[in-house]
Image 1 (cartoon, rainbow, N blue to C red):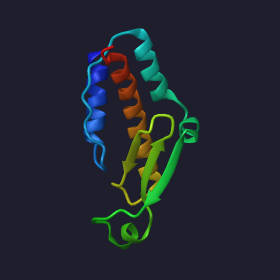
Image 2 (image 1 turned 90 degrees about the horizontal axis):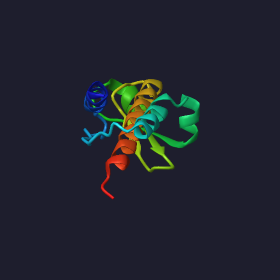
Image 3 (image 1 turned 135 degrees about the vertical axis):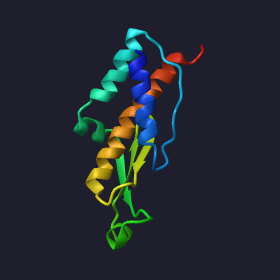
Image 4 (image 1 turned 180 degrees about the vertical axis):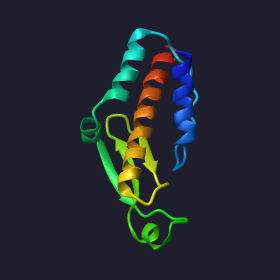
Amino acid sequence: MAQSVSWLRLAVAVRGGGGVGVVKCCWSSSSSSSERRREYLKVEEEELMKQCEMSTFKSSGPGGQHRNKRESAVRLKHLPTGIIAQAVEDRSQHKNRASALARLRTLLALKVSQERNRPS
């Protein structure tokens, strides 16, 4: 279980650019919480995208004309939970979409863990 915690914190920290910060939380070893986390991590891409609203926008910074003229940055909003993940690092919209989707999966798994550990 300790390896999973480290991996999730590392994933959010390493891919934390674009407005997504490091989320620290307590972890439960209960099987139902673990199963729900795994469900969010294993959901098919198409199924997860059906639950999301995707928007694109122009990112700023280095990257030349392509980055400044094209809407390559991606923002995903998970409609059932309201969680937002975005990616702006790459010049490619497809790569940014994949990065935002990976962040969204991680944030959903963290939300499940936080709900499970919330005091009653």
